[in-house]
Length: 296
Image (cartoon, rainbow, N blue to C red):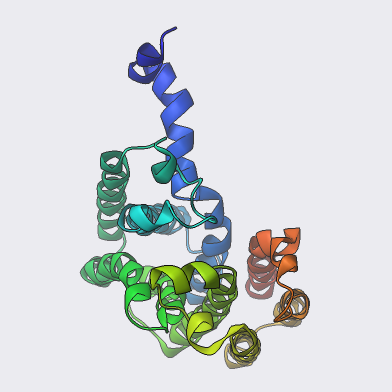
């Protein structure tokens, strides 16, 4: 089979392009984002919300994540060529064309808006705000050193969005859960920014580590994660959840503390540790014990 035929035949397209599309949008990272989203869903419904709501929330999150990840790859395709951490991505290596990634943005947008329309009026009304935010945050690193906080809030949209999808309103408990995610994810983005500090200095990309140094960045991450853990604990008391929730909280916070303890200002080698590649385990633990807390 020729290379051209492999790309134009349905089987060839599926075998060659689809895996690259999924890799570009880092589909496996949904395992990190989905649990927090589903936490918002289960807490809002005080249990299982029904298959229809569950399916459309999942589709909506998949759509908006596709939009956000594809936009990030598309908008940063030129500097990704020069960054050792990103040089092997599909756009810099030519494995995908810019129009293909832009097409992923369009598909993600369409899927997201359609799914939001199946949920309720408020979900659909706020969909343009969420879509704009996940695209525009990619520009943040060119301007403020606080770009990591913009990323944190991009991920923090999901639990509040799921709450709105279930209840048709935004309650303060949902906002607190979003604060948890914003601090959690923003802290990790500061850590990953430490690995890019030389590149950021060379190419004028703004970041917290570049502005304040690696030591200050790691201290700030620990403070953010401590605040996130405290807010998560407060949420359990606020909603009067059972002891299962607090068991999950203790396990997740212990893993979070372990991750933070591995990094030193003069030694970031542990950033490549498998522990940092499986943050989804922490969020899955939280989801599992949250479900037990509301269902049992």
